[in-house]
Length: 173
Ligand SMILES: [Mg+2]
Image (cartoon, rainbow, N blue to C red; front, side):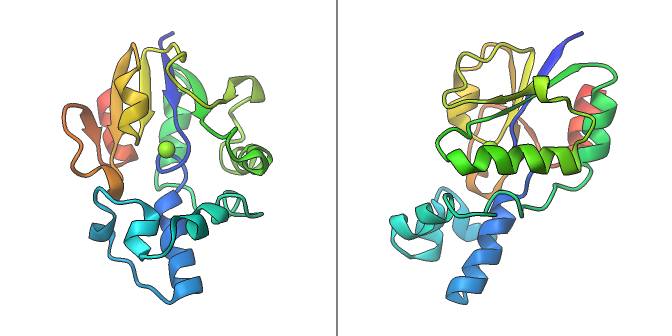
């Protein structure tokens, strides 16, 4: 079986949606997704970096992310044909690891814990495909990199890009 490594934030979990939700709740801001092109969340919200950074250490920040449409059914189908690993750079945010495990258990109960990798760097990950929203992770990947579209990466070029999970299905199944 070929192996697919799948990122979590902005691939399986709607991290940008969580940012929009909290920007509205805490600052009353309606962020236009276009404002995220080539910008950090702090730049898009026009608040100090440290304020947004602190969100990532808050209880429930990761746990309450919504699951991306069709990701559950497509990952399930992929798991019949490929070996699936979830690979998330979660170690920087220690409390996120428990929340991410709980989140995976809720939304992807068919993925065994032995197939979940929490890391920092991803350059040592060996797989045939990596589906990720960050160029920094795809650039060093030795298999076939697949860029999962997010508002922040709209201007990234040079990768096979998928807009949603239906496109992943078409590409890999
Ligand atoms: Mg990500």
